Length: 296
Image (cartoon, rainbow, N blue to C red):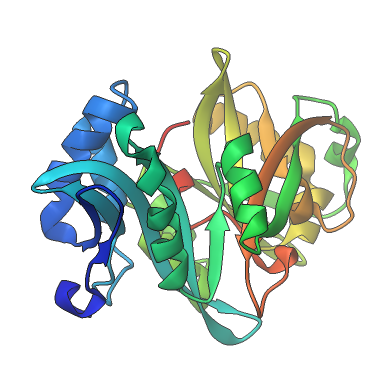
């Protein structure tokens, strides 16, 4: 749908909300680098606009503009996924920021993103204030904690019966994937994520991880796991392979991904949000989102 079809929304003062397309990437990336986080280069911010899976040319976000000047932004990372055999639309919200003197108009950015958000909307990095606003707008808790899996805490799983191997070579692992997981791999292979296939006698588990740091400690964040049963049966062997590949000290996984499994680890508070008429929290992973692009 063209930008003109989405229209612009009047706000207070002289600012207006307008949708953004790929042609706005340079100007918005510069704004985000200069105003939001200069530790991220403009090129890193630009990745929010260049996700290869958006084939519908949907708006990649909304800007609050005063004349020709950008004074606020919210990103909308859109995708379509097959969930429980049905094609579901997703919209991941990212980087809601408004210059202080325009904060009175900032809520309209969020309202516009939600109004035109696809079926399931996620917010994976809300601040406390943003969380309170989103809850008032119908968002629910997606996740409340991650589990930090440290080396050798689950060493007992090394004695699990059956052969298992962890494939890291990208050309080889793609051929091991089913159609749905192959699409996930193709959509994410060009980004700074790691990919692993755990091949066991009972099937395979495909994992996508992202290397991050917290207080100078590197860890691997699980964005996706296709088969938690295979992963948990061989959790220590898989974890050690991931930590070696990513050069990290721990593996972090959202509690909901575990589907009731309780590996030995440490809980880390981390609240994320979603709004959906069709899906539950257990249906939603962390792919196709800002977590793929941004480092921390």
